[in-house]
View 1 (spheres, rainbow, N blue to C red):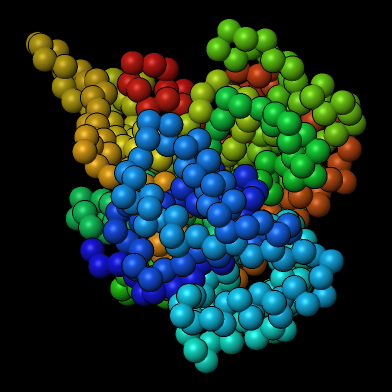
View 2: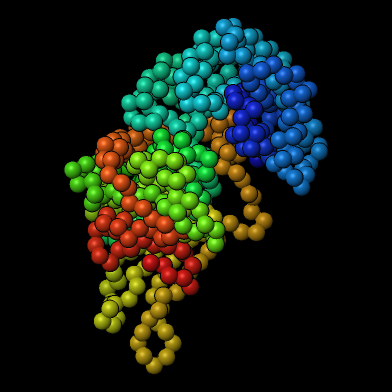
Length: 493
């Protein structure tokens, strides 16, 4: 693979956790893989003034922490030479003019520039204003791209206000709204497995599919993020972004080509085709709960309200929705999406149950076919089919076709590494278009608003348990159930 164009990465918030744990190590790994142009430079921006040599020592500390078993010293020498630092005190009215002066030295800094805003969401619009005011978003001498971290707004009006503010200075092609989930190889694989296999595409519709489940569950609680989480909740934190993006990749039509525009156009179409949830029948389409005290891996853990220190909170740590997509492919097929903290297993997967087979054996019939795409912790694809039990009688049992997507010797790429490379290559197919952001907020906003108004105590589930029994209220038929572990030996119900 050839390296990308010479460019300058400008990292705002360079001393923050994201930069230390993901961005700087991610750029190092890209350098190790030979994917960075030899002339590329990295300019870290922070509030305080730090000498370049001192910053380079900090970089070494970040890499030592990330790669405790060591790393290639030749690559390190090359990487450390790329590193520069610029102090940008918020109290200095000329800070961005000075930044422009630093960056205008083309003998040091290539004039293609990517600005990564790893800062508080409240600072996104201000920094874009200041970059534009200094002329740093002007593309006369090279491309200029701005990465905006999640979340893009906290609801539809705030997302539209942020968009209005930054689009005064930036074209849509310059704005890279990052959702690190889209950098995951397993997520990108959904598209290829669907459309590159004749065996799957003809049955990927309402004629054969009974329903689809998209699941993200964690055994972890909210930890020390109680205040943040109580202002956010599971709907905003996971469903509005990661899970609806997974749904878009699962349900979209085949793009006319694999260009960023082709892929994003089909995702936008399917997100905009999701039927709004009727707020007057919310309890049939949406369910929320909070984890109570319980046990995780033999250890007793407190409940959410105890951790928060506020028994009045109605913020959900468990959210499940039933959605319908109003297009010919998916008419009548329910999509059940759910996310939860402190459940009995940590898993992210897409589970597709097919309709009953034409031949039903025995009074109770047999299990329906399932296709399961594992995203994490194990990247795999599994299919459950019926097969005759050897012997004199006519009877079937479920057998499993199981393939790991990740095999020994495969490259292990962090989601941020993939997205950092996409950025300098100008591939925004794994970044969010404003139409996707708006469609996602438009869908969840009425639910968030209705739940915030309803102050009744929220349903509790013990930490370490399975889905609350009451969550089944959203199912369309009595024979539907939450699909659990993809191991056949365990109870799938």
